[in-house]
Image (tube, rainbow, N blue to C red; front, side, top):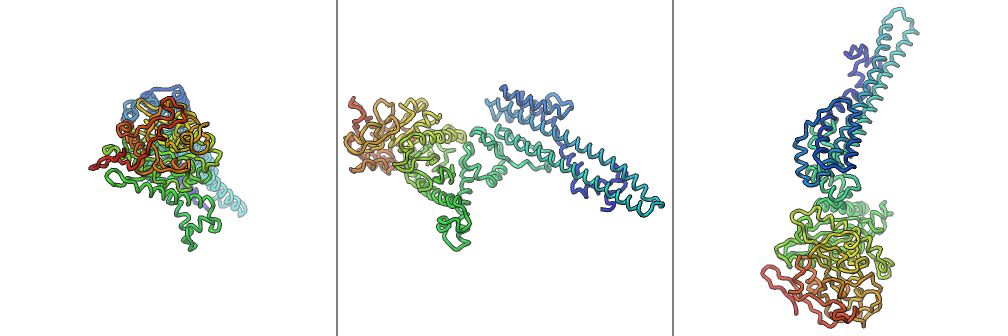
Length: 639
């Protein structure tokens, strides 16, 4: 290294700061100056302005006071009283948040934490620089003395070699001291940046996105990269966070974090679909690329993934990606009242869920924009892996619902977000635990739809089929699901709900029930299937919502034809032209009151005091060919 750092620098007699910086590979003074470029006092003042503009809870006030004490201890300087009380930032955010003024105080607390973190970082960095300069001045003094001795002609060869060795050691000490200081400053900056990213994520969740970065070391014009909010953030917080992001930040997040964003309630449906579709395509390409490289089919790779260097998980994801793509294609076949196809969205995609059976939700039409939204929950044997997403029931319901009301847009969501019993001998079929767990997940997803919906509130109908109807009943009765109407078809029992009142629907809301008289599944415990004459005894899951006195509105759901199979009618509630599909479309379109007008209201089991085992519908001749009219057509309602 010779005497590269020795010169007549202005701040030191014998140490050249530029040479020292070059030897270290970085400038400690520049690192410190970068941190000092920020103004904690200004951030503190903005924090106090937000804090004072909002209503405080005890927790928010305590958090703010704690951060304020940290700031005061680190900053130790007089700060202006309230220079930004009327700032545009405070006024803008206060207007955006409206009644949610509690969030203003929380924003104040988050900002105060940023001010305290920055002040602490600056204080620590200043101490590092002060220690470095003290060390360098000491080394500089010793080095200057050694260099003065070096010009003495009376030095012996041994003394000169010893002096040169001492000078070299002083040079190394200066470099090491500077390198250590630079490393410490980088750690200070990194720690501050990490805490800043967390604080910025919290601010965005609360509804505030600073226009300028509070990171003093960031290059001019560059913002901190957007960060995902904490895992415990709810749909309302996620919605505020998403709205606070720029279009560029949203695109960056979708590109970098598709698997995390796609299943977050509170993110708009279009964005979630983009993310989930990217993950689905990656699951397909992973196997297809390996297949192409080995000259075999993707099916060959999926059957024996280990032979081609892939895991069983990759094969599971591939299979469920295929099935989901098939479901999307089936949904895309739907047509509205004008014979045009709607947009289809992948609202949920979790290919590894439920031991590889998968979870997914496909929306026909955008529920964020629809006036009428229906969520269809299937039952026994439904899962992604076995192709249930391709069932045509959702597309048929969308087509009929749009014909039922031409003037209001509709969306139908096929929701496969719970672990349904697989077969009739699955122990879960005879117990309600899977329905209750599914009901909790369903309630969360349904309630989150209102958060991202634009415009006037949508009319929301949740439809449960078979075991799915038990999950819907549990979601409404025990998990706080908010729906305008509920439809139960092929219901084996409503578990925790013992009457329509237990569904906690709003004023004007109804529990609508479709129960074919020969559907063995719909007969409650202790009753024989059918009208007491056909089929085996079926163990149910609670009260029969089709019974008189339950408080439901029953619609016609008989199936033409006769069969000795007591379960045949259970799979025909969504047949095209059926009584059931026509009636469900009335409800979904917000016209449940039209059932009586259309001749689709049915008598309850046990009416006329005959007992719950008597079904008046058994004596009626089933009808078919039912269609709502499209523009220029007449409704087709068979007598």
